[in-house]
Each structure stands twice: as structure tokens, then as C-alpha cells.
Length: 154
Image (tube, rainbow, N blue to C red; front, side, top):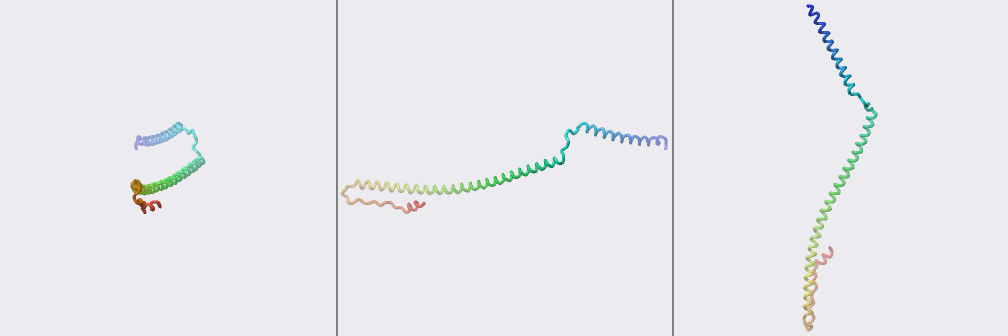
């Protein structure tokens, strides 16, 4: 081993140690600089205050869930009422159609009766205008329709 080799090994060892120490010093200086740049102005919350806040939020969440359940029940009630209203409208529509048919039949009967009355009145007027010497005037039978009695029952 020569002199340069003997001297080189300790110098490399000293250089490595110096660079390690310089690296450690740099990391510590950076940590101190960062800590100085962003100090904590407020203390972090305590565990007790976090637990109280958690309980408050859980109570709020339960209240909101109860409100949602109430709204869902109300929505179901409204849906049932809407279905009942639709059924009622369908039944009323059917009933109104039946009433319209009944009205049309009643109007047809009324028209027939009015024609019969006009015919009877004109026959009575002709009979009154006929000479008094004629034998007893012929009596016009009153129109009698069995359906009239059935219509009265409706």
C-alpha cells in the first residue's frame, strides 16, 4: 500500500461522514424552517369536543331520517289518495255515460208523448168542431205505455 492509498481511505471516510452530517443538518434546518413558517394558531380540538360534535351530528342525522320517513309515508298516502281519486273518476265517468243514455231514452219518450198529446189535442179540436148533431163524440184512448211505469221506478 502506498502513501496515497493510505491517505485516500481516511479522506473518503471523512468525506462520507461530512456529507452525512451535512445531510442531517439540512433536514433539521428544513424542518425548523417549515415549522417556523406555519405555526399552529389554534389548538387542535380535544377528543371530548369531537365526540360531542359526532353525537350532535348523529342526532341531526336521525332527525333527518325521521323526516324522510315521514315524507315517504306522506307520499305513499298521497299516492293512495290519487289512485282512489282516479278510480272515483272512472266510476263517475261510467255513471255519467249511463245517465246520458238514460237521458237520451227519456227525451225520446218525451218526444213520443208530446206527439201523442198533440195528436190527441188536434183530434179533440176536430171533434169539438164537428157538428153537435153527431152522435156522442168518440173518445180517444189515452196513450198507455208500460215503459213509462218502468221509467218512473228509475
